Length: 375
Image (cartoon, rainbow, N blue to C red; front, side, top):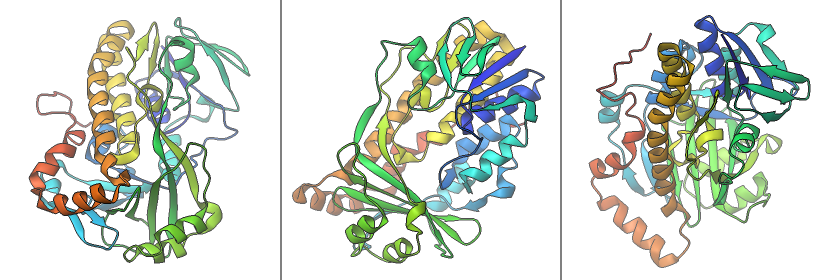
């Protein structure tokens, strides 16, 4: 049996590694000139770690840093708006791990033979019978997995009338602050903007910022420093530690729900199927869940039944995560002074358990009735 993977990011490589372990022939088509990841830090939450265990790539704990769950949310003056019960989250769900995206890609690549990797192969068209046309020729597989991201050629080939990605109204910056340390993962909310800090291995801090802006706006590190210079410590110091050229900026999109993730011998996975805002940090984790679910069902049931089972399993869950992610971040982008003042006054009054119930369903995978066990 042969699987063709369109896209060599985290989800695609994890899927490829798992099928390779099952004895499948694997071919990965990546349009970039090399297999790498343009990015900064990544928090792999408990559900993502369980998916990696199922995929046989649990060694991510070795290259990453085990960290506490997010501590909560602060106002720009440092006042706590929400305090998470870290102990309860750890007891219920397990570990959180931070890792550099490039190091996770390297770990996944090490699971695959070099002859499975084809870089510089830009896919032009994907057909439901498993045929893939690309710049290096034509490839066919018993199964095709479209893991080619937000602007997926696979999705556009097979769902030409499907919805287009929708701009969320804000842009996102990601970067690493070198030679800095923070004790906690914390997010800070202001008016139409927010900032997050996450401990990383090697004396680094993964930082991200989001701000309301028209699509296509481009602002550098200097603009961020100016905008956030009066926010609480250590935000100004973290921004001062950033190499300006290393700051990555991307507009924030989500994908409206598709009627199916499957057609013929082709399945969509990750952002190609359900791109979401980064407010819950679940983008990569959901792609890993997709990969584990797809490999399990296809291996157990065969291609036709396995794809149908994958589609049933993943669409409802990912729709829930997309929706909760959108809702979780929305109040941070309010700009009306009255609304933001009410937000900052009301959030500390909400019991932590109530807030927790709104976000923890993302971590709860597989659920207690799921028979899957980490390998």
